[in-house]
Amino acid sequence: MAASGILVAVALAVSLWRQLGLERTLLWACLRALVQLMIVGWALQLIVDEDDPLVFSFVWLIVMVLLAGYTTWRRATHVPAVLPLSLLAYAASATVTLGVLFGFGVYEVEGRTIVPLAGIVIGNSLAATVLVSRRLFAAADDHRDLIEARLALGLTSTESFRPDLRDSLRTALVPQIESTKAVGIIALPGAMVGLILAGVEPAEAVRVQLSVMYLVLGSVATTTAVMSLGISRQLFTGAQQLRRFTPSG
Image (cartoon, rainbow, N blue to C red; front, top):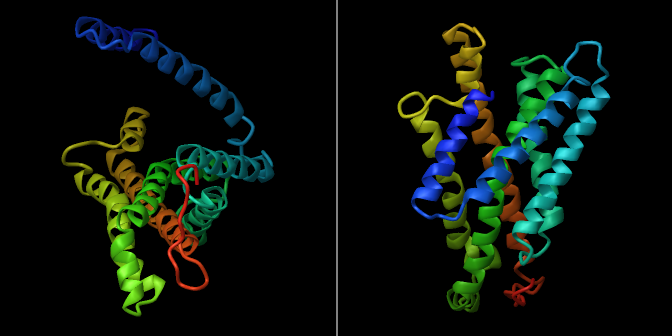
């Protein structure tokens, strides 16, 4: 691990050479990652053994959902009702994706599977959830005239906002779709590389990685769908009128 720190020195050298001013940020990021991973590694000892109570794993899952909701709120504070909607979205994503994996016996219900898979679900959904939240709110503001024109012609709020909703969802989903398409050709994903480095047969590593990639794609689709539907309803009144929001929300 110490030898791999040489690569951090390379990043620092590039920053100094090109006068990027990122030296302090780089060092802080690396130190923070080291401390956080050491803490997580210690905490994982409470759940990875077969005899460890599953309640610890589900508590960890709940904490992850709460922290993800808080992070989404911090990054999109101006979006109406973003905190409760994001909590609902992450909970729905975890329920759907983990329900499929455990319900169909893809993985055993154990602490060593619940927490890592939930982390993948929530962590990979975070960026897309924030993105779709911001895009929907910005679309309602930027295209207000068009939306209100559709409403004036007799369309419902759902029909009036549908083009903006579709574009926002596409924007949030396309990066994950492109990442899925590029797996194995341009990049070898971290889970697969980790398994191979740990001595697992490549064929087995590929099967695990495929399930993880499909898991991520399904989780991103679930969270963005829940957020888009929830925010769309928040943008309109019961009388089918587009609300006006202050910059602070």
